[in-house]
Image (tube, rainbow, N blue to C red; front, side, top):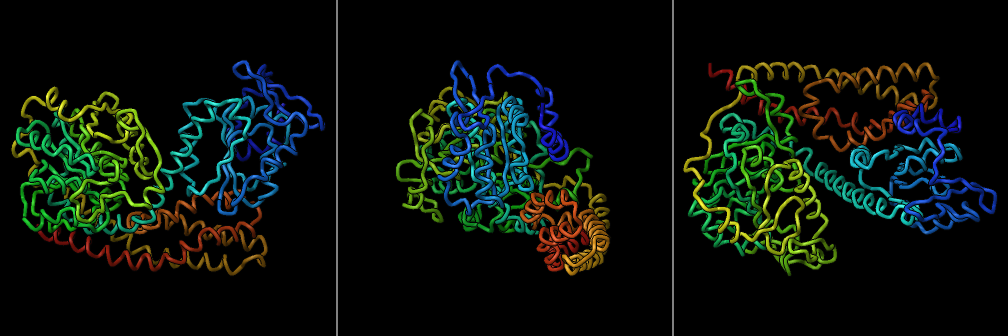
Amino acid sequence: MILIDNLNFLTERFPLLWQAIKPLEGKVFPSLEVITAKNGAPTLKVVNDGKTLYLHSSYNPEAEAERFIAQFTGVENYRHVFFFGIGLGYHLEAFMRKFPNLEFTLYEPVPEILSTYLATRPLSNLPLKQLKNFYVETNPAYRPLLLKDFTDFSDGNVLFVMLPSYEQAFPELAKEFLAIFQRMLASKRLNLNANAAYQRKWTLNSIRNFKYLLTTPNILREKDRFQGIPALIVAAGPSLLDEIENLRVIKEKGLAYIFSAGSGLVPLLNNGIYPDAATSYDPNKFDGVYKQVYEKKITEIPLIFGSTVGITLEKYPGPKAHMINSQDTVAPYHLRLKDGTELQTFNDSSTVSVVLVQVLKHLGFDPVIFVGQNLAFRGEYRYAGGIPYYKPEVTEEWRKKAILTEAVDGRQVYTLEDYNQMRFELERIIADHPGAEFINTTKGGAKIAGTTFIPLEKVIAERLTRRVVEPGWFPAATCDYDRDYLLRQQARMEREHSALPETITRLSKAFSNLERLGSAANHDQQQKQIERFNRELKKLIRNQFFQVFIQPGRRVELELIAKKIDDVRFENDPVRKGEAIVNVFKRLVTNLQSDFESMTKEYGTIKQFIATLDNVN
C-alpha cells in the first residue's frame, strides 16, 4: 500500500502523477524485490534482461548515497537539480540534506519502481517545498512531452543527477534519455538567450515594418501553388563554393527555384548568380547581406521578409513579399485577411533555413534541396569565403568549443553546439512533413536526419531535367488585408491604451501597500491586500495594449514569474504569501510605467500610419 502521507501529498500537489501510478498500487512486481540490507535499511533488487542487481547497496544504502553525493562540486552555480532515477530515494535525501535550498525535479522512468518507493519510504524525508516537478514515464512516447513540460519553465541552468545503478540496470533507456534531455536543455538555453536578446527588438521591428505589410503581398497566400516543383535552399556553409557552377547551370536552365538563406546570397552575387528570391528574417539591423543589392540597385531579386526583420526595407530596390513571424504580436492583432481565411504565420527559428523549409513546404515545393548547409566545420572553414562581414576560418575559440557529429558520408565532422541546435530544429521541421522529400547535397556537411545525401551534380543529371521556373513568378504588389477590420481594431486599441495608465496606477498602489505591510501585518490585512493586488493584476493582463506592446518585451521575465508562481499559489500563510508576491512581481511592477511610456512613443507611429488610411476615404 502507498504510505498514507505520500498519498496525501501526491493527491494535493501532483494529482496527475498519482492518477498515472494508481493502477499499480498493491501489485506485486516479479522483477522488483525490496530486501533488508545488512544495516537494516530497505534496499531494492532489480531483475532486467536476465540480470540481477541492487539499485542501492545491500550493506549500507545511506552510506553509499553519502559517498555518491560527495563527488558533486560547484553545485552553488546551479539553480535547479534534475534527478533521473529515484530508486528508494537515498541519494535524493543525501543530496538535499547537503543542499536544502536548491529547487529540484524528480523523474522516474520505471513506474513500478516509483510505486515501490512510495510504498516503502516517506517523501517527507525530502524538503518538499523545494520540489517543483515530479514525473513518471508510463510510456516512452510521452518522454518528449514530459521533458517539454520541464524545459518550458526552466532557464537551462540545471544540474542533471542520474542514479548510477540505472546505467547498469537500464543502459539503453538511460542513454536515450540523457541524449534527449541534453538536447532539449541546450535548445532551451538557446531560446532563452534569443528571447533575452530580441524580445524588445521583435516588437519594435513589428511596429516599424507594419506599413510594409499593407503594401506587399503575403507570400503564404500562395499555398500549394508550386506543388511538386523542386526548390533549392542555398546557405552560406563552406561547401557552397564547390557548387557555384552547378548552381549556374540550374539558374540558367531554370531547373529549380533557388532561394538564398540569409548570407547565402553573397557568394551567389559574387559569382553573378541571382537567386529567384532572397530571404531575411533576422531581427538585427544588419544590411550587410544586401550591400551589393543596394549599391548596384539590383531590382531582379525579390525579397521575402519576416515581419520582425531588422533590415531597412525601404532601401531594398526589388519587389518584396512578407510573412508574419510567430514573435510578432502587432500584425496578428491588427490584421485579418479580406476573404476571412486564417492568418498564417511562420515559427521563428535560430536559422533561416528552418524558416525557408516552412515557407517552401507551405507553397508546395518538392523536393526541397539543401546546398551549402554544412552545420559543421569543413577543414579550417566555418563559412563560405567571400562574405566580407564573416571571417570564414575556424578560430581557436571555436576549435576549443568544437564537438563531433556524424557527417553525410558516415564519418565524423567537427561542429558547434549552436550548429547542432540548428540541425535539430531542421530535423524537427522535416519530421513534420513525412510525405515530403528532402535532399542534402552538402559535401562534408553534418548529416541531417530525414534527408538523403545526393551530390548536386547527380541531382541535376537525374532529377532536374526540365525547365520549371516561371518568368514573373513572384506575386504582384497588393494588400491582402481587411482595412475596415484594421480600423476597428485600432479604435479598440486606442481605448485599451487610454485605460492602461489607471490600471498601472492602481496595481502599483496595491503592490506598494503589500510591500509596506511586510511581516508586521495581521493576516486579515495581508489577505485583503493580496486580493486587491490579484484583481488589479488580472486587469493588467487582460489589457490589449499590455498584451500586444508591453508583454512581449518582458517575455523572459514573465517566464521566470510563471516558474515561481507555484511558490505563491501553495503558500497558505497570508504574510509569507504577501512577501512571495513582492519578491516575484517587484521588477515587473516597478518597470511598468516606464515600459508604458516608451511603448506609447512607438505606438504613436503605427497609430499615425493607420490614421492616414482612415483619411483616404
